[in-house]
Length: 198
Image 1 (cartoon, rainbow, N blue to C red):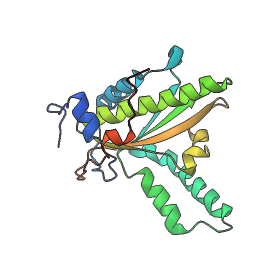
Image 2 (cartoon, one colour):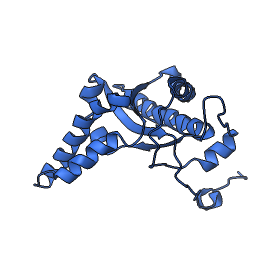
Image 3 (tube, rainbow, N blue to C red):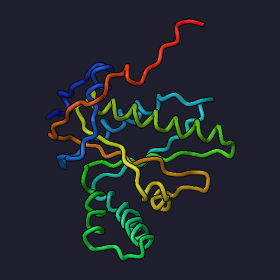
């Protein structure tokens, strides 16, 4: 387990190739300066015309309680769509999920009336998210990005105080973990076409 004075740092390619979604976390508090380092890495993502469309909302400690109502509201909404009532089990799972990692970062974006700019801004937010995930892995932290109804249907918007021009993109779970992960990817040549002649 890494400490404040002895933190690993992997080279970029190793961090990219060994990053995996981690869903089991220790409830060890993550120092604010570590989170700030990851947010700064995210902030260096490419964004067309330097729109800086991302916004980061960091929840830790008892602050995570603020997310429970939004997550449970999305569970009720999904159940009602099926003509059902949300079970206590599903509502409890929704609450527990908000406390499953010591830090949750909601990434939201500032939209744009121009469709192409809006698409570019959304893509830029995911570039920022990937920067954060890779930087977290390089520093020995586990993470994974998540969406779902509470993000996609903007149940979390009121918690974040989002304006009509803003919308959530993803929730990043972050923390120290002892979960074993294994890299799995198909060979890149299965998805690559080379064009070497006119």
